[in-house]
Image (cartoon, rainbow, N blue to C red; front, side, top):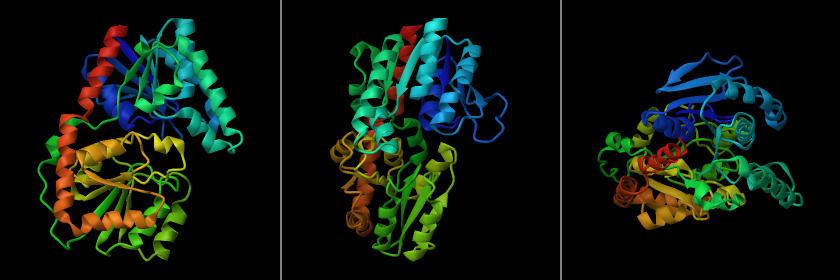
Amino acid sequence: MKICFVSSMHPENDKRVHDKEARSLQKAGFDVVHICPGSKVGSAPPHTVDGVVVRQYVAGKGIRGRLLQLRRLYQLAKDEDADAYHCNEVDSWVVGVFLKIFCRKICVFDVHEHYPSTFAESRFNKRLQPIIEAVIRLLFKILLPFTDRVVLAKRTVSDDFTCSDKKKVLVQNFTPIGSLAVAGDRSPREPGSPMTVVHLGLFSKIRGWPEVLNALSQTDERVNLKIIGEINDGSLSEFYQRVTDLGLQGRVEVLEWMPFECAFSHLLQADVGLIAFQPHIKNHIFAMPHKLFDYMAAGMAVLIPKQAIEVAPIVENSKCGILIDPSESDDISQAIMTVFNDPELSHLMGCRGQQAVTEVYNWEAEAEKLINMYRELR
């Protein structure tokens, strides 16, 4: 069976789409292709990454650009003549539905987030947001009859899809257990020694960098912050200015995107994993950030928003970290200093997190659900 992943936004190195889903299906014996936007002006020629064939194209900019590229994306996907099309955004889902209608192909929609609220909150004022959300849910109702399966990255996105539960498959964004072979056993940090707090992935104002920098300025000068990823909301210069204003030069390091294995090696050298999604955005409240499970797999204590209803219970039940109010810098700084002043507690939290990932929250268990789904569709 040939499966074609169709992406209008997710790049070839996306952690869920490529590193987890596409690679797992390829290892299970499926022929897998990923059509995705290129990162440069000129798309790279077709190439194979981890057994997955990657075909890039130059993506349109903004909503208008993505709408204008639908016809081209449809043709690229049709040319692959795959048996099934695994669509990773709402616009690529439309492409998959067209392939279902006109070419009788299998269409799968992978739901990564709460699209109605995310789209409405990011582009419209509060008065219009309920109307926009209703329109998007109406679009979902139109597309669902032509969709064979809906893959859910988290439980809370299920309510947006009014279809039979048999059509829904929960495949959560946990970390590969294979990472634990690299992690090994950690020793507690020496009391009074420097401590590194790490933020993995996209960072922006709504993901809390202003509050995190303010919090860092209130902690011991031996506490450092490492960011692995990208400040993606156009506020990079403002970020560095804020670092200077707070006198944090030498305590903040920003590293660009890198392969997961390289990023994980940085996690192994850090002490605390941080998530600071701001609570006024609905998609943040329902977030299932895979970075949490990467932190846990690396044996780090974690700090996450107490408002995140998907993952806060995981941290609370596993006793692997501290729940924070990410909108309050004082609360963040107090949590950081709690683990800084008690290395034994930090080490114990990290051990509990590793155990939880080993026993429950691992990608291998989730991958079997995806693999079995496609075997049923075959």
